[in-house]
Amino acid sequence: MKLKRVSGMLAALFIVAAAGLVAHAAAANAETTLQRIQRTGEVRIGYANESPFAYTTPDGTVTGESPEIAKKVFAKLGVKKVDAVLTEWGSLIPGLRAGRFDVIAAGMYVTPERCKQVAFANPQYQIQDTLLTLKGNPKHLQSYADVGKNPDAKLAVMSGSVELGYARDSGVKDAQLLQVPDTTAQLQAVRASRADAAAGTALTMKGLAAKAGPTVEAIPKFTDDPKHTGYGALAFRPDDTDLRDAVNQQLHAWLGTPDHLKTVAPFGFDKSNLPDKTTAQLCGG
View 1 (tube, one colour):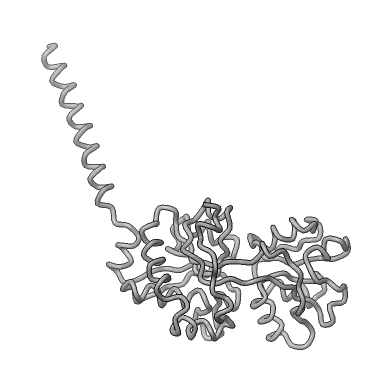
View 2 (view 1 turned 90 degrees about the horizontal axis):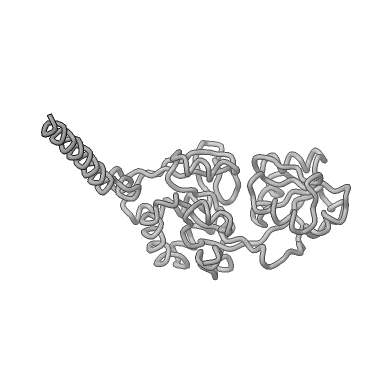
């Protein structure tokens, strides 16, 4: 009886050990995101409607600086099909981490806080902010600090954007902030006088002003902390560092070339927007 009991215990231990080895082998052979997209030739990008970084045209085409860069870079990796998933800005990182798409291609700024949640490629551009106001800038707002000093002033910002933090750091109270899902809502808030200004990148605000007609303007002289210069990059899940590294290798060889500058020129970018910092520097590493 004792012998049978010992034999049973040994058999159970063998089964557990074998199961562990199988699980380990399966994990070792698990396909990475890089391997999958190269095998299938398809990659999914997540974006939010914010011209000129990433947006949908009236005919349904997804374009912008970031999607066009993604198309070029992934083509160099043998990935020809780029599918796009439209997402509100504040849901981009949760959507990436949940596996709804493989990469964020939305012109997202690299910040230390975001670096804890995603693996950024190296920046593909740098840019500063400005404000969108009604024509003539009725409340004479030239900076985030100006908004903070005027308790009656309201500022429209996209939820989850860095401008939200910039405004708070400059003394803008939460009661003065109108958080909206996208740039269209920012424009609507200013035009309807629900906000006295909207904050965003200079290219985005100028683009909104150009499309909206003579009732609004992007202020030409915006005063801001140089530390608020934004550096935009593609973002990946933390486990996909091999994919991030493969993209970085392609970006390093391509950024600043005539082909790159030709690709981003339709969206208002030029040599002055070439980045001068790495993601490691921006993440604080």
